[in-house]
Image (cartoon, rainbow, N blue to C red; front, side):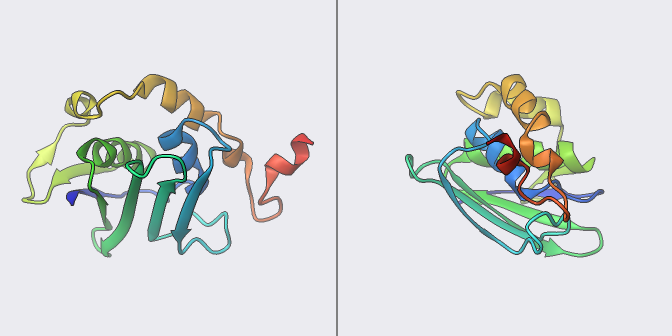
Length: 145
């Protein structure tokens, strides 16, 4: 498994925004596990996502330390780890490090993401329906019907 470490400085986004970003669609068919409670929590510390169509599209995020707040991003596919670590750092004003502690400049991560249109995925994530979720309205997608 390949791993990177992200120092997180702000609350995390609704975990479903990671699905929108990683899979490229608010309603992509994926499995997820984690500790977001309620579902809209911005304080989650564990997240696993896996495509139901492509077994190579998966990642796991796990909190490994409180102060500073550190998360480990892991997958058997290095490109997945770079994609997710970049997004977590971007969303939380964070920093990415290799397992050995060496810093990684966010801009240097682009060429490690493989066939992945980062700008398009960021647009999808930024306009995700899950950004509108709140404790009062945890499923804003139901308003679309």
